[in-house]
Length: 271
Image 1: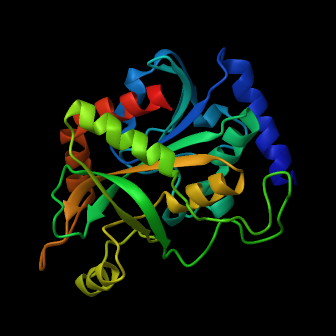
Image 2 (image 1 turned 90 degrees about the vertical axis):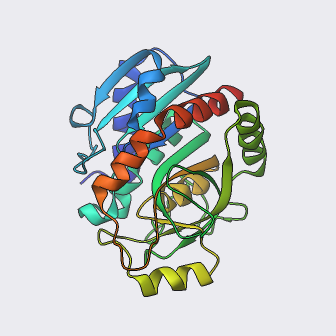
């Protein structure tokens, strides 16, 4: 059975043979946010099913393809549809694209997600710059033997989200007249949404938003020495006695599309 390094190299070699650019920024697009890939010019689309060792994406709102081209003037490679731990994938599979980015020479990562707002000041449609995260998934993608090819055994996660990139995102938002929140993202495995008691607990810990992704990819990116910027689309908020649902998440992501696209495109051009 091929080891992780061999699988990553095989996937990266396949992608290199399909694209004509050398991507500088990798983007991971969350639920309902894959529309940003439409902004990529001179793009080449590669379906996951055609790439060696790539899992399939099974969640509504995640299409399952890579798009490589330019966002503005910046060469990028975009993951339209991530893999989630709750789908039954291993952490190695969930974070596999990040390892491939490393092999492609990409050292800048922008991760996005749809998240539930638990900060009482947030409303659906807000964009939140991730300042830090809490890993409450009960596991870590670096558990197991460490291959120094990818990174050190004990990587630092402080700061997890590049301060320089966060400042840049704030400047871009100000220029565009976009209100950009900033807060802490808490990651759970899902797929069930949180109970009211859990949400109250998470808020007491200082979490501003909660979701089911992102943190594993960020940990692996930092393991490989990447600089990371994270943006959450607040798609629903905690209302006592009222539960969340995936359709609500996708609709909120649809509503915020123009603002989201404008901000991310502006930020990527400046990275």
